[in-house]
View 1 (cartoon, rainbow, N blue to C red):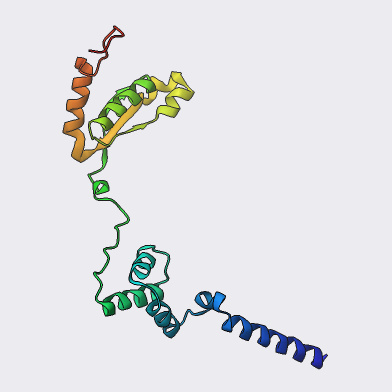
View 2 (cartoon, rainbow, N blue to C red; view 1 turned 90 degrees about the vertical axis):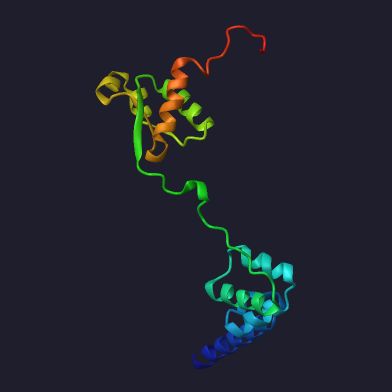
Length: 173
């Protein structure tokens, strides 16, 4: 029994040493700082910048890559922010209109989005599921962020005045 365990341990150690010396698995095995320094030192400028921007590096690898970028005197790459600037907080959503027919709510919502006003339709599924509840629920609600309420009201007024109406004839004007 002792010999069998000793053989298995020896066999395991030999396989581990072979894996460690394998060039194919070097990048997967070298997770210590010294190995990462050597790994990034061998990369070209474009490759190290691409790796750093890929956001697939661990914290240690990212720090080592950034040090190597600084050592080479390369321009520090700007990390892309996870949220675009246009998605900044514009206030809580407020109701700008209610519709008994959810299709009308989606049409006006599309007009608002075409005008650059972020909008969503709420309660449309409830109204569609049970149309008798439409009046009790107040219909489908059209919501926009508080910052955009004034602009949304102008677009809705233009829609109600017929500014977005299509002509009845088939010929383009």
